Image (cartoon, rainbow over all chains, first blue to last red; front, top):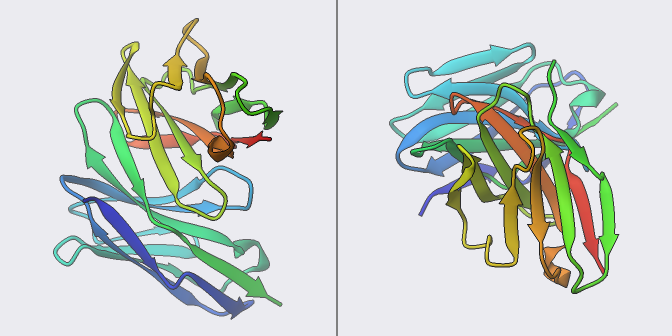
Length: 114
Length: 112
Protein backbone atom coordinates (compact mmCIF):
# COMPACT_ATOMS: atom_id res chain seq x y z
CA UNK A 1 0.00 0.00 0.00
CA UNK A 2 1.34 3.46 -0.89
CA UNK A 3 2.05 5.37 2.30
CA UNK A 4 3.87 8.48 3.42
CA UNK A 5 4.82 8.86 7.07
CA UNK A 6 6.17 12.03 8.65
CA UNK A 7 7.85 12.84 11.91
CA UNK A 8 7.59 14.55 14.24
CA UNK A 9 3.85 15.27 14.24
CA UNK A 10 4.52 18.69 15.66
CA UNK A 11 7.34 20.80 16.95
CA UNK A 12 7.93 24.16 18.55
CA UNK A 13 11.05 26.15 17.77
CA UNK A 14 12.33 29.57 18.68
CA UNK A 15 12.54 32.21 16.01
CA UNK A 16 15.94 32.14 14.31
CA UNK A 17 16.60 28.48 15.04
CA UNK A 18 16.85 25.67 12.51
CA UNK A 19 14.79 22.50 12.34
CA UNK A 20 14.58 19.33 10.27
CA UNK A 21 11.45 17.40 9.38
CA UNK A 22 11.48 13.76 8.29
CA UNK A 23 9.52 11.79 5.73
CA UNK A 24 9.50 8.07 4.89
CA UNK A 25 7.54 6.66 2.02
CA UNK A 26 6.51 3.44 0.35
CA UNK A 27 5.19 4.52 -3.01
CA UNK A 28 5.66 2.73 -6.27
CA UNK A 29 6.28 3.47 -9.05
CA UNK A 30 7.88 6.63 -7.75
CA UNK A 31 7.70 9.79 -9.84
CA UNK A 32 8.72 12.64 -7.58
CA UNK A 33 8.64 13.86 -3.99
CA UNK A 34 7.29 17.23 -2.99
CA UNK A 35 7.24 19.30 0.13
CA UNK A 36 4.28 21.59 0.64
CA UNK A 37 3.55 24.29 3.16
CA UNK A 38 -0.05 24.55 4.28
CA UNK A 39 -1.38 27.37 6.37
CA UNK A 40 -4.50 26.64 8.38
CA UNK A 41 -7.58 26.68 6.17
CA UNK A 42 -5.59 27.22 2.98
CA UNK A 43 -4.49 25.07 0.09
CA UNK A 44 -1.01 23.48 0.01
CA UNK A 45 1.72 25.59 -1.56
CA UNK A 46 4.66 23.88 -3.21
CA UNK A 47 8.12 24.38 -1.71
CA UNK A 48 10.24 21.84 -3.58
CA UNK A 49 9.88 19.03 -6.09
CA UNK A 50 12.56 16.34 -6.46
CA UNK A 51 12.79 13.54 -8.96
CA UNK A 52 14.51 10.21 -8.48
CA UNK A 53 17.88 11.55 -9.61
CA UNK A 54 17.94 14.62 -7.37
CA UNK A 55 19.14 14.35 -3.80
CA UNK A 56 18.88 17.94 -2.67
CA UNK A 57 16.92 21.02 -3.62
CA UNK A 58 16.68 24.43 -2.03
CA UNK A 59 14.06 27.15 -2.06
CA UNK A 60 15.28 30.09 -0.01
CA UNK A 61 15.56 28.99 3.61
CA UNK A 62 14.04 25.59 2.81
CA UNK A 63 16.31 22.71 1.79
CA UNK A 64 14.94 19.29 0.95
CA UNK A 65 16.92 16.09 0.63
CA UNK A 66 15.96 12.80 -0.93
CA UNK A 67 17.48 9.35 -0.55
CA UNK A 68 15.63 7.23 -3.09
CA UNK A 69 17.43 4.06 -1.96
CA UNK A 70 16.15 4.27 1.60
CA UNK A 71 12.97 6.10 0.57
CA UNK A 72 13.56 8.94 2.97
CA UNK A 73 13.38 12.67 2.65
CA UNK A 74 13.96 15.60 4.95
CA UNK A 75 13.07 19.27 4.93
CA UNK A 76 15.45 21.63 6.70
CA UNK A 77 14.28 25.10 7.67
CA UNK A 78 17.09 27.56 8.32
CA UNK A 79 16.82 30.64 10.53
CA UNK A 80 13.11 30.15 11.17
CA UNK A 81 10.72 33.08 11.05
CA UNK A 82 7.32 33.53 12.65
CA UNK A 83 5.75 33.19 9.21
CA UNK A 84 7.15 29.67 8.96
CA UNK A 85 4.45 28.53 11.40
CA UNK A 86 2.39 26.11 9.32
CA UNK A 87 1.99 22.44 8.48
CA UNK A 88 4.67 20.97 6.25
CA UNK A 89 3.50 18.09 4.18
CA UNK A 90 5.58 15.50 2.38
CA UNK A 91 3.84 14.32 -0.77
CA UNK A 92 4.90 11.53 -3.07
CA UNK A 93 3.75 11.33 -6.63
CA UNK A 94 3.38 8.09 -8.48
CA UNK A 95 3.21 7.67 -12.17
CA UNK A 96 -0.14 7.07 -13.69
CA UNK A 97 -1.26 6.84 -17.26
CA UNK A 98 -2.89 10.24 -17.02
CA UNK A 99 -1.68 12.71 -14.50
CA UNK A 100 0.24 12.23 -11.29
CA UNK A 101 -1.62 10.92 -8.28
CA UNK A 102 -0.34 12.38 -5.04
CA UNK A 103 -0.13 10.54 -1.73
CA UNK A 104 0.05 12.91 1.21
CA UNK A 105 1.75 12.47 4.53
CA UNK A 106 0.03 13.61 7.67
CA UNK A 107 2.20 16.68 7.96
CA UNK A 108 4.39 18.17 10.65
CA UNK A 109 2.86 21.16 12.40
CA UNK A 110 5.58 23.71 13.08
CA UNK A 111 5.10 26.56 15.52
CA UNK A 112 7.75 29.26 15.59
CA UNK A 113 7.78 31.30 18.77
CA UNK A 114 9.44 34.67 19.28
CA UNK B 1 1.47 33.82 -11.02
CA UNK B 2 -1.53 31.85 -12.35
CA UNK B 3 -3.91 30.53 -9.72
CA UNK B 4 -6.52 27.85 -9.35
CA UNK B 5 -9.70 29.54 -8.17
CA UNK B 6 -12.33 27.79 -6.08
CA UNK B 7 -15.80 28.98 -5.17
CA UNK B 8 -17.42 29.26 -2.75
CA UNK B 9 -14.81 29.44 0.00
CA UNK B 10 -17.30 28.08 2.51
CA UNK B 11 -20.59 26.28 1.96
CA UNK B 12 -23.05 25.07 4.54
CA UNK B 13 -25.65 22.57 3.43
CA UNK B 14 -28.24 20.33 4.97
CA UNK B 15 -27.75 16.59 4.98
CA UNK B 16 -29.28 15.03 1.89
CA UNK B 17 -28.92 18.14 -0.24
CA UNK B 18 -26.89 18.33 -3.43
CA UNK B 19 -23.87 20.61 -3.58
CA UNK B 20 -21.67 21.71 -6.46
CA UNK B 21 -18.17 22.89 -5.77
CA UNK B 22 -16.63 24.98 -8.49
CA UNK B 23 -13.07 25.37 -9.68
CA UNK B 24 -11.38 27.32 -12.43
CA UNK B 25 -8.09 25.56 -13.21
CA UNK B 26 -5.09 27.26 -14.78
CA UNK B 27 -5.90 27.80 -18.41
CA UNK B 28 -3.14 25.79 -20.09
CA UNK B 29 -3.28 22.86 -17.68
CA UNK B 30 -4.46 19.51 -18.93
CA UNK B 31 -5.00 17.45 -15.79
CA UNK B 32 -7.52 18.24 -13.10
CA UNK B 33 -7.99 16.80 -9.65
CA UNK B 34 -10.12 16.93 -6.55
CA UNK B 35 -8.73 16.18 -3.11
CA UNK B 36 -10.36 16.49 0.26
CA UNK B 37 -9.11 16.99 3.80
CA UNK B 38 -11.28 16.10 6.76
CA UNK B 39 -10.42 18.28 9.73
CA UNK B 40 -7.27 17.04 11.42
CA UNK B 41 -6.62 14.34 8.83
CA UNK B 42 -4.45 13.86 5.75
CA UNK B 43 -5.29 15.24 2.36
CA UNK B 44 -6.90 12.41 0.36
CA UNK B 45 -7.14 11.91 -3.37
CA UNK B 46 -10.65 11.78 -4.81
CA UNK B 47 -10.43 11.87 -8.58
CA UNK B 48 -8.33 12.87 -11.55
CA UNK B 49 -9.71 14.06 -14.87
CA UNK B 50 -8.02 14.23 -18.23
CA UNK B 51 -9.21 14.56 -21.79
CA UNK B 52 -12.79 15.04 -20.65
CA UNK B 53 -13.01 11.87 -18.67
CA UNK B 54 -12.13 10.46 -15.28
CA UNK B 55 -8.68 8.89 -15.41
CA UNK B 56 -8.63 7.59 -11.85
CA UNK B 57 -10.80 7.70 -8.77
CA UNK B 58 -10.39 6.57 -5.20
CA UNK B 59 -12.71 4.37 -3.20
CA UNK B 60 -14.02 7.53 -1.54
CA UNK B 61 -15.36 8.70 -4.89
CA UNK B 62 -18.52 6.64 -4.94
CA UNK B 63 -21.75 7.08 -6.90
CA UNK B 64 -22.66 10.14 -4.82
CA UNK B 65 -19.81 12.05 -6.46
CA UNK B 66 -19.44 13.26 -10.00
CA UNK B 67 -17.16 15.66 -11.85
CA UNK B 68 -17.71 17.70 -14.92
CA UNK B 69 -15.91 20.19 -17.11
CA UNK B 70 -18.97 21.85 -18.57
CA UNK B 71 -17.52 24.70 -20.59
CA UNK B 72 -13.77 24.27 -21.03
CA UNK B 73 -12.87 26.56 -18.15
CA UNK B 74 -14.77 25.34 -15.08
CA UNK B 75 -14.25 22.03 -13.33
CA UNK B 76 -16.96 21.01 -10.87
CA UNK B 77 -17.42 18.43 -8.16
CA UNK B 78 -21.00 17.46 -7.39
CA UNK B 79 -22.07 15.59 -4.30
CA UNK B 80 -25.55 14.32 -4.95
CA UNK B 81 -26.87 13.66 -1.45
CA UNK B 82 -24.54 15.00 1.20
CA UNK B 83 -23.80 13.14 4.42
CA UNK B 84 -22.39 14.48 7.65
CA UNK B 85 -19.10 12.74 6.93
CA UNK B 86 -18.72 14.71 3.70
CA UNK B 87 -17.83 17.74 5.81
CA UNK B 88 -14.26 18.61 4.81
CA UNK B 89 -12.05 21.00 2.90
CA UNK B 90 -12.20 20.20 -0.79
CA UNK B 91 -9.21 21.18 -2.87
CA UNK B 92 -9.14 21.44 -6.61
CA UNK B 93 -5.80 21.16 -8.38
CA UNK B 94 -4.56 21.27 -11.92
CA UNK B 95 -1.30 20.30 -13.54
CA UNK B 96 0.49 20.25 -16.82
CA UNK B 97 2.85 17.55 -18.01
CA UNK B 98 1.95 15.64 -14.86
CA UNK B 99 4.44 17.53 -12.70
CA UNK B 100 3.63 21.08 -11.78
CA UNK B 101 0.61 20.88 -9.54
CA UNK B 102 -1.20 23.98 -8.38
CA UNK B 103 -3.82 23.77 -5.65
CA UNK B 104 -6.71 26.10 -5.07
CA UNK B 105 -7.41 27.58 -1.66
CA UNK B 106 -10.19 25.12 -1.03
CA UNK B 107 -13.89 25.08 -0.27
CA UNK B 108 -14.88 24.31 3.28
CA UNK B 109 -18.01 22.19 3.12
CA UNK B 110 -20.06 21.88 6.30
CA UNK B 111 -22.96 19.43 6.28
CA UNK B 112 -25.46 19.96 9.07
